[in-house]
Amino acid sequence: KYETLNEPDDYSLFQNWNNNTSSSWHLDLINAQTAWSFTHGNTPIAISDQNYFVNHEDLIGKILHYDTTNTSSQGHGTAVATLAGANTDNGEMVSSIGYDSQLGLYRMSYNEILSATYNGFKIVNMSWTSGCNFNQYIQDAINEVYNNGTFIIAAAGNGSTCGGSTELVYPAAHDNVYAVSSVDHNDLHDNPNGSSSHQHNSSVDLMAPGYNVPLTAAPGWGLFGSGTSYASPIVAGAVSLMLSVDPDLTNQEIEDILGMTAQNIDSQNPDYIGMMGDGRLNAGGA
Image 1 (cartoon, one colour):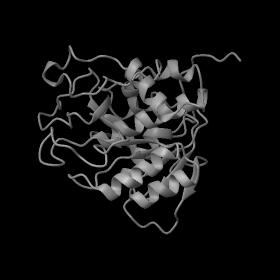
Image 2 (cartoon, helix red, strand yellow):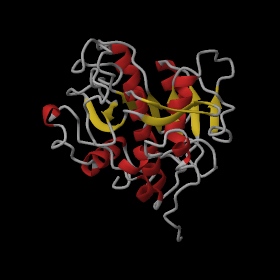
Image 3 (cartoon, rainbow, N blue to C red):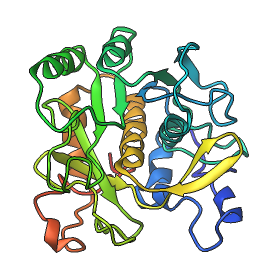
């Protein structure tokens, strides 16, 4: 099957909002268009977050699961969900690495993570923290999800989350959770705004775009945001593409492929060598 290396018609819409910033730099950085030459995605992604604008133009037609009784705030969850799997090439708002991948929109709790895996989702994203200490009950729940064949991705923390950028943040620091921290458009981990850099420690597995990322948090509203909350779903969307090419990949194989294809960014970040996991996500390579 022959397909062009197309640029979606919503790839450059951000240029209208901020002419000083490349419209989809985060997708350029991770080599998204090469990944799309293999697949546009067909593996659903479970997002665990606060709540979502399900009437958002980039979520309509995407949603496999949503709890209509959810009354939590909707901005953060919408931003996370659309970064992972927004409608792409629809002439609206933003493109996403997940392109055609559908979404399960779950609440923000470990019970919801268990529900997602029992409902058959092979990928779950958690852009949140539940605390700064290990908890065996939570680890048991995570192990259940992981052993059921679901790849678990979590935001590593935003520097001050647990009092310092080297501190462990949970659930990202639990075993069997793939922890993602941030870089900017130059692959720099230092916060360009001068405040605390996002987490860098032994629990981090991979880096992805997480500073000044173009995103949408409500219908018709585009903005730039920073946080590992936004780096993590980009990895989730890339894993969806991987599983769309080979649905038999195990969790360990997914982790190995992400690691072996990652871009080494040690030279750009000499102060953080050994604390950035395997490097920066290369979705095309993966």
